[in-house]
Length: 478
Image (cartoon, rainbow, N blue to C red; front, side):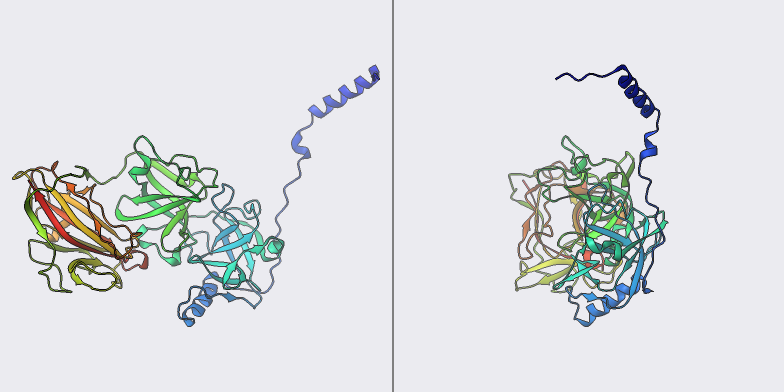
């Protein structure tokens, strides 16, 4: 059946379409909901005081990390949101700190809902009604949520509006500038800034630079090493594989990183989590990589021994001395010392040991340097040694070479020290009872005279107070 339109009908439809084309679409948009000052119930408690209440329970429990505290009083605490899930790098959680600038404490708030940024946007002042909520640690991080057996769990979405009250205020959040060596548990959940930062050159230079978390081995997160140009400590940038910037390439220069200081999944290593890749400001194209010597590994070990030490002549627990060694404290209080242990973490007889556990050092930098070696007197030089660790954590051991250090132990930093790139050092994941061979490190590309050094960097900070052991050092030639 055919449908007939009259001229009058067509004219009516045309007039209607013309009228609609003249109307601004925005006039039909739902106006944004006005944010009202919240009605708060009870008494305000500062976030610091809340943390101290849990800390008291923690100390009374014998420092049990699983201890939680459920709030029974009509209290609320106030803070500012410094995370956003808009870009997929946070999920079902808010990170809240007590002040928009120079904060003293922060907390994670677990919430069984997403997205959260549409209501609790970055910088938004919020108030958390605490009665019935539980505080404690979640993977080592101070957290607010609900009690679920012996852990802190997510607040249900149906309770959200009655528990978390957003305020009319939205503040400018100013990141707190922190050195990597100054990371502490108390600074987690804070929006911080690392200056003079860069990604490790192996991740950003060469033919296959890495993305934030888009590599085949990145199962849940991508962990990328971050260095600072003026300190030896490193940290990790962790990015979720669900973030919308996971496939972006890491920037190759250096500059500033703004992000949340946190801990990894195991709670034993600091990491940084950015809200978005735009929180990384690398305006400098020049990098500050250490100089490196890369001769490779050799298949041959010469019969001539230029230098060797197994430390068996040392006195146990005394500083390493003799045999031409320089045992130099650049910073802190710790020296390389002779160590002997027949237990589960057995040494190789007497070994050289260095660590900053219980040192209270703000920074521990200690060098063990060989006597001067003339590399023009022979050919085919190689270096071998073994290392072990006892929870090295974030402390660092490097093998270095200098041609221009003058042998003055009071001025060790005056030399130009280059990393012996091919020398393998034990890492923190290696079991403490395993001794890691260095590999037969080729030194044949070195000419002139110079010193080989084992440089330790640590501190009294729990996350940087690890221990390394060194033994069976030989330098051979043909």
